Length: 139
View (spheres, rainbow, N blue to C red):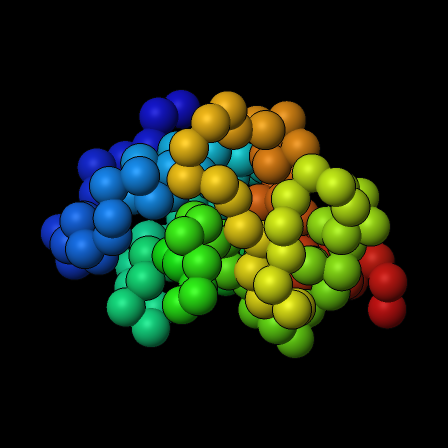
């Protein structure tokens, strides 16, 4: 599955980013949609803006935690942002301690250029998009 066309307001948010970060985050966007399509229980994603940044929600099924794409203020890296009240960044750090750079409990940072570590990176949105399903098993 290819990613759907960008909604106008989301397209504007991507356009406001520096070109290298925009290009990297559009790659991540495609990966998020491909990952969602590979998990039947995720359903159709809602693509919108949260805090002015592109955001991906599992509103249809409630299976996951919101993923946002942007950057953090003091970095030239692209950022995949997650809800800081989840254990997602902690889980990513455990699984991929040297693969990515992290910022507190909120962000996974990616260099704006160079090869994208697609295989490990695809695990991260997969865990986020199914986060609430995984939490049900832990109760």
